[in-house]
Amino acid sequence: MKAIISIISVIVLTVLTSNAMAAVVGFDYDDCLCFTTPSFKVEGQQFGTDAFWAAVNGNPAVASPKASVVEILKAHVSEGDEVYVITARPDTGAAATIAYITATFGVAADHIIFAPKGKDGVIKKKGITTFYGDSDSDISDARKGGAEGVRVERAPESSYKSKYSPGAQGERVLKGTMY
Image 1 (cartoon, one colour):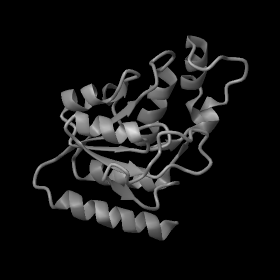
Image 2 (image 1 turned 120 degrees about the vertical axis):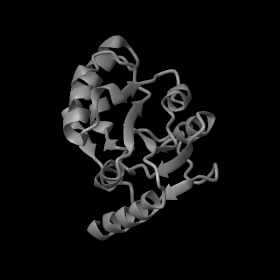
Image 3 (image 1 turned 120 degrees about the horizontal axis):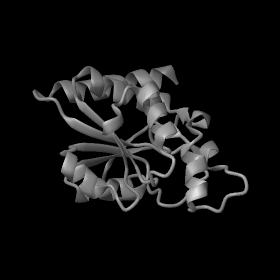
């Protein structure tokens, strides 16, 4: 696993250092930056309700950062790139998730965006040039927003099985990024 992370880091750094200017990049949160299936196992709440999202967003510590993707984020930070985290979750009860992302990944709170109606408008507005995501909609939203969508592999243990067709949109797929 460590060798895969190192290979990814070298590839990312090679791409990053070929750019003279700092970039603006974005990362999806669920199943991209973190394995978050445990966050969605909320007892007694109906999926999609405010109570459900308050419970999911209020318990981020059960998520597991994906080391391979964290290395990519760190490489961007070390190059001086501006980093955003964009999630399709609504912002109900979001304070704990924002605090977790800030503490765990060093992303400023004002660079953590909840976009349940789609990420393309945020990607465009923030001038994001590269967006990393696991789902098909991450890749299509990146393109609609004027960015390159780069596919991160989803862990097979993820409870979210739909909207996952790596390479089907002709995007780059980063192998070895399931964990």
